[in-house]
Length: 296
Image (cartoon, rainbow, N blue to C red; front, side, top):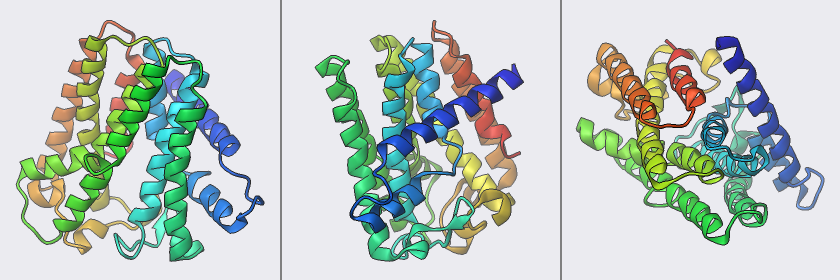
């Protein structure tokens, strides 16, 4: 089973890379520098966790994989844009991402800003242009899902809360609220977009939405632990940056042992939510374990 899951992951990661290569503008198309930087920031790195979740949910609901490719790439482009902007000097001011210089270091700040803008709009263009076989109502639902997950009530809002929380003593509830938006919103969108690409009823969508909320928080708790325990080489980004910037994290708030206990509890809750689904959610179960076991 473990080897089967590893093989499945490799297949999805490869097909996501191939689809992104196809849909991103060619590096030599004008304006070439912008398009080259868009490809630099989107291709050749990352675990593709959101596309994996999107395909796992789509597979459980019997979705056409080619239809899921569109949704998976749209989510991944939003994620890539967020990383480019997060790394800018006005945000986290980081110089390393996925083991390479960040976009603004490799190119320049103005180009990085435009890369994020262009990747974001390309994500919505994909959903609008390449889901013609879907009923218009479902296509519109998917567009709304991604806009809500990306905007001020989702990822962008969570980032704003994060930037405004530096040096502050948040409660656990406030930290969870921040990460439900900053990290969890896009993970939830990935799962639900995959489900909407298939045959999802209201009860299944509700169950998968609850699962995604648990999985999103789990992902963030594990990231906080990695930032505290991992090295720059293994992480592919600057280790210890949160502590250096006096950012509130689950580790700074709870300590490592309790943060790991929280991760274990969230994993159990995510599995329990999936158990309530009548569909085969084995891929989502395996991804839940992978989120944790990739690190400690």
